[in-house]
Length: 414
Image (tube, rainbow, N blue to C red):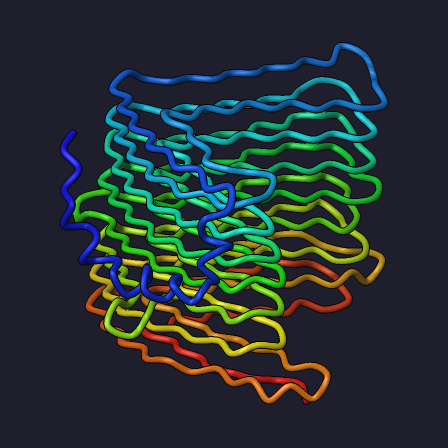
């Protein structure tokens, strides 16, 4: 793999922003590292647990990752470069079946590439390039006669990159490209869920995230999901008798987020914006069937081509983002059931081509502001479907929303 010095011209603005850190702090305890990974063979994880007799607790976990890298310090300065290429299949399968489990937890996670970096009380310079092809697949299956509380989390993402900084300064430049087919699927069939049941399914092509506390936080993401690739997230859950049942499904092409508190934060820079391009087909589908339920029941499906989000507390906040969606985005939520006790049913189906949000919360008389520049182009079809078939209930609330482009700049508080 060739690493061209030309990348520094791409991140020049970000590095200049970091130069505001005191020179002494930049020199103190500096560590520098390069990680280079290529995975061309399949990775597969399978965990299948059967319960011949009732049990108090059951937990099932499966994780498959093609490449994983971490460039982290407990404290001090760190500079890192991570390069990852994945070109195979990453498959994770979890299953739990049999008799009653009072507490049941099922988790299945599949990534092509996963990278992370961070430090505290220092400066973190983080650069990552990730490329994925092939297939990334995660599945969870639950078949139980009964539970008190049950939950599942099924996640499949081709490229994942995350950074964190506390009491310091962070500069992250993350590039991701996916032509992989990504699929996450949850199937559940439960006779009784006495207290709660939650099923969450997430599939995506590219995801970056940055978090900070009392941190100056500069971030840029460059993400592309290729034409001909697909992202498919599906939740199918059936509970014969349950209380407080939730099924949530999310599918996305590109996602970039920054969550910061008490320090300047930016997603993208002026002249070097965060860039997202999605040409993959995106599908999010939820099918929830309840024989009878009490409390609430929620069936939610959310699909988005590109998502850019920055949230900050108490300090200036900026977002510079260019988004293009050419892929078809579809969400579909279906809900069937009845409630003899007057339960509330909520059905939500949302599909968005491009979504950008910058949110600032001001406290203690802060006069901080949120601003930046947002460009959005949607050329793809955006479709949201919802269907509810219910007997006697307390209420059923349904909403289907399809939006080409959505942008929000907001500041709340004092």
